[in-house]
Image (tube, rainbow, N blue to C red; front, side, top):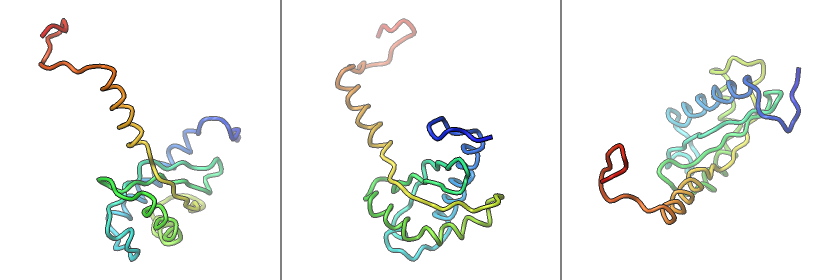
Length: 134
């Protein structure tokens, strides 16, 4: 049974994506990476999206505490074969997925939305009780 390409991800895709995300996060946290763009920064893997056949994974990464996401993505793409080899042992899959990397802009988007909401909805100065009165 396969799903159409335009539909939502299956439970299996979500589960395997989370397993791959954890494996990548462990490699970034514990390995000494030779690439200077990866060695100097802590990388956060926010999400991994799997293809329907589970042979391709797109990992969304961002540097922890800000930084140049473009340089981190380029470095991850260079290190993709090494990273794939490192996660292969921790995955209980028939095939280790090919890794692709993209910058995760969700934090910047959330911050922009928060600023827009703050501009529209004024915050209360003090604590409020249950009825909303100060």
